[in-house]
Image (cartoon, rainbow, N blue to C red; front, side):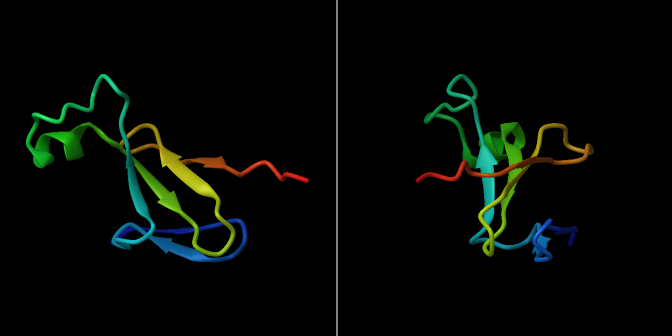
Length: 73
């Protein structure tokens, strides 16, 4: 199990089924594919349940990129 500490202090885990996401391009997503094939194509995304930040792993073994939602008025 891998973990990551979000900037807000929350510890995120890669085995959290409610906050772990997969990101696919439209070209990679093919509804005729088996789920295992789609899993191998997706980029891993972790969502912080406390602050809502997204952490995207663009490279499988690379460091994640942090994304913060823009504040709306």
